[in-house]
Image: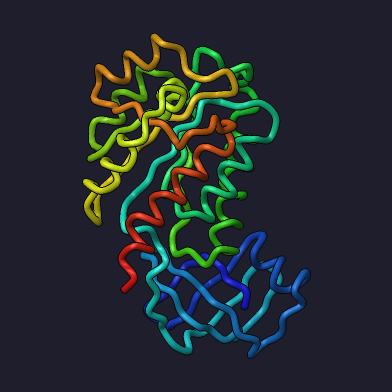
Length: 251
């Protein structure tokens, strides 16, 4: 069943769907009145709805039944990615959203080949947000991850102060056989807590960047015995979080 993030009106007990989603319902899916869809409100509530009206610029959907769902990770995970080449950031956002990330922060690392073009910034971020929204709908999430503009190291360190656990994925740790930092960090992370982890671009993080992160309370960690690509590493981390904090809790 199709799923849409939409505005909810308590006065009418209806959702109002506009923009591209309205076009998707009427022109792509060719839905009609009384067809059923799933709608998610701004406060993360999910409802089974029946389409009451379709106009040129708006779809009105009446709530049939509110649903009880628990699909979000029990902790807030923020992925900081050194700006990679090509469309790799899009891949990280799409797959990371499916795996439960709450926020993505692009990072202008020393070894980032891609240089952020301020003239194209709005268009790029708009595309990233669209990818996150569509991935959230596809994976039946109740939250669309936040995506920020790229930050430098100084801004990142300032923003990171509020997190419960701060990690930096460092390939040198993997080469040296480090296996405990990630496990112990996840075991110590309580439900409702927050985790921020930094990943380097294709060339990795420099020693200077790692030292500055460590000085600010980040713990270097390996991600298993193999060296992962910059677009693969965040997916490994999110899967590990899910296993530790979701699957191991299943009796």
